[in-house]
Length: 169
Image (cartoon, rainbow, N blue to C red):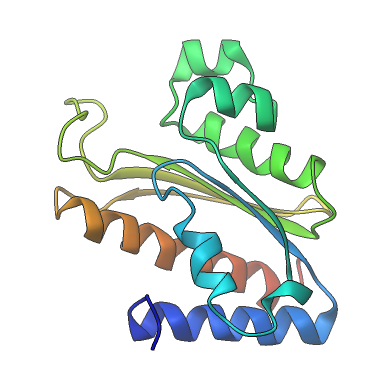
């Protein structure tokens, strides 16, 4: 029995199968999901052929130290921003052997939101080593911490699939 809902398990299973078939590896850089994307991928047998390494960077200091996110980026745009997500994805790629990386940063709640950055706002970035890049700004709404985190995992896995299906990895 999986720890994850069936749709997430199926997405993860497809990624592991497709990436294994093509010899691709993936890395994750996670803030608001706290390692759930890596957990969903590694829930699948055979994931060691695909998952290179995963970074849980919950604090700004961790984002800077582990992924090379710029202090100026965090000061200017904040941890929950397009710019930070893009730098997280780039850092995860640079610090791994992966062919692509996915990064997420957001506000899962129940507190911590503002009018400008409400609970449920998540920025996701997926980047392939060949330079192809996807970014999504998701506004899931204040649907509950667990649901925001699971919705983010779904979106992140969909983005990895999109990179792969487009032949972008």
